[in-house]
Length: 521
Image 1: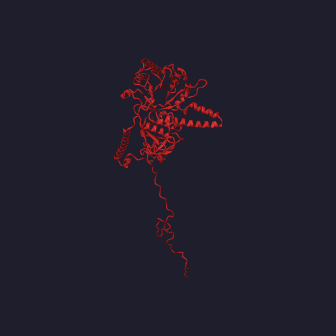
Image 2: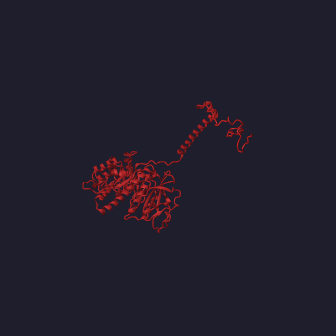
Image 3: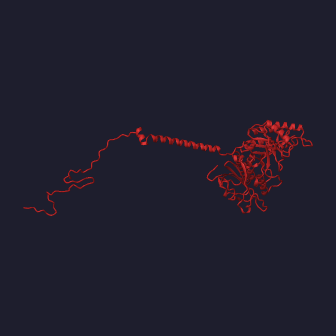
């Protein structure tokens, strides 16, 4: 019986082609080889481990390009160091050969700040007699701490007797031992003392020709030797005294030279009372300097307080006409209002030369101590007034100390060059130039000058008038526009500023250290 195959069924003896022959990646399918095809791909056999070893010399030379490349590297390193040394040598040569300001060797009296006073002004006479010279001895360390280097003592000698006589000291100042004690204490405090004998009859009676008796000259010479032996640093006379003559000063200079050394040079100070200093013949010779310091007053002598315009004219005159024959010394001299007191202090301390300041109770330590006592024992109203006075004196003392120490450490303020700077003010009512004289101008213009040393510049601005002033933006285009406040007489100014935004308050003086934008010198 023949078997009939049903549709859809596969015969049992049918050959299966392609079963298990699905080709995978990397596999080839062949007929009859489906059963022998591996189901998993075997992993490659691990290569044998090879230990790291550094390259040999030969391998390094091959990798580096050979011995020629090694020589080239040596030459490049040598060239680098030679170039660096050459640049260093050129930089040193530029610094050495570049022009620099020559520092002027100054004497002690050219660097010091002088303080002129009478011992009885320091404090009132006390019941125990501790006023006068004794009070001055107590304040010597304090005066030295605020920057004072020398004292000019007035009124130590009695005008009725021979002024340089060792026994003819002023009755109100005590006896000779007290003055000797003062000189000894001044030496301990590192303060020089100059004895003021101005307007005193030093040479005694004179003949018709104006020449003093030889006996009087000899007596004065012996007196000079006595006070120099006690430690006096010099003597101050007036240009109207009989001692202000070539013959007398030559004798005095001979005596001073015997007691002088490089560090302790003895000096002669002449107070100029006239508009023009009477000339001496030795000034024109140039080989002998009979006068070391000429003390000039910025303000003219007057019985009344000078107006702001008179003060401005006097200051401008001295700024424009400065004599170079002898070393100058500046003092206020005349009378000015309290508003201009601090302004004149800034002017004296920043002008070239030796500043000489008169006694000021604002920087008196004894006066400040008495204010503190009044503040602690006064009633409410008096305590408020005393507190205000104490604050004002504290600001005045701080200004004095700042100016004195700035002048001592800044070469530009000590012996730098001086440049007067006339300029216009930006306000409408004072737009005229400083050199022009317009009677209708209601307020004096700003006065300005520059003290320079190398690349360091100090700008001093003085607003003498009672109105605020701003600087003209076009003024002094060659000056640096930025600066930092060093000192000022008004409200305390701190930090940096720019000249185009600076406005001076009434009766204000400002000291600014200028520097280029983005730098500070």
